[in-house]
Length: 226
Image 1 (cartoon, rainbow, N blue to C red):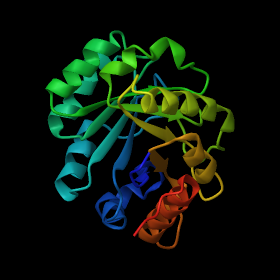
Image 2 (cartoon, rainbow, N blue to C red):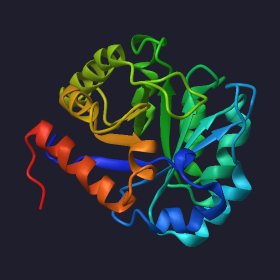
Image 3 (tube, helix red, strand yellow):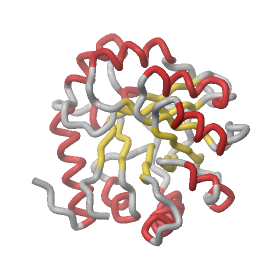
């Protein structure tokens, strides 16, 4: 990897009453990570397409939608059509992930596939040839503030090897428990994009927190940032 690590603040940890301000507080972010939960695929309920459409009107930062929902084959396309930059669906929920990837791209977004901590990578390697992003969950999806599960880094290493050897062409993203204590080991395993929630929005200065995390990840990967 030669590019600077990407930081995607998760608004799950932001103040939902001030979302426009919370996005403005992290101007150097690479993506804004938006968790969509339906209280079916995961035991929690968050925001949906109307809020995403509102966010798209108030920021130029690419929106990274993580759909923790049942039947993404039906619902995911709307997020792409609305203007989300990257739309990620769960491997465990998609009925036809290859077709869904093609439909997302046709609708104008990048396509991401996410796997839970207990889901192995191997069965999805061929599927991932159709995707732009692999999102490895390092906590159980559904709630913010969970502790980082380091054993998922083996899947990150596997994915990194597949990308580096040309078998896959995608970004490796990680979501869950990423902070100053965990980002270096994730970076060393080969992550490209780091989703960070409380590590950003619980900080006194969220914008500086983004830059500090990026620099920390870059240092762990031996990349110089300017």
